[in-house]
Image (cartoon, rainbow, N blue to C red; front, side, top):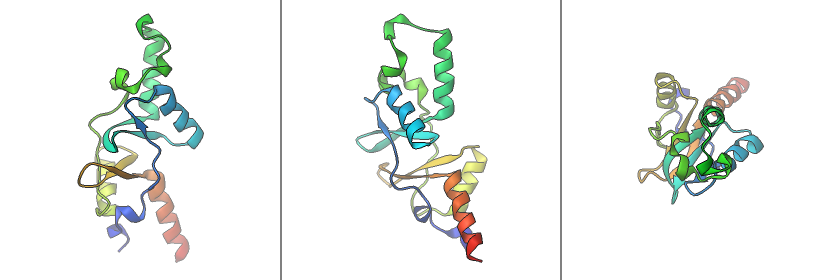
Length: 143
């Protein structure tokens, strides 16, 4: 049955990510150049957070109103210095979990992506609402 397809069959395996020591500008640049709406934050390949287009935009707007000279140009500072730009309570899923579970989590938590990690919390992929839509489109085209 389609809903019991494993996440690893649908997920994007080559994930664009940033490290804590990377700049906020780098995360923004990846989102713009690669047309992605979320970038996982890793530390030695361990998932520690997620920067989304929305949180980055909200953070940028806040900085317009609360500019602090101490940090200079905000975009070129390290993510580690501005950890509130990154969501830390990220919902995750495992490669062997089902598409059904991914859909349930995404609907329950109103999110459009789930980082995929192994049992050691290493980032191995990401599943997005676009990945799921493309999967269903391909299944419908097969019929």
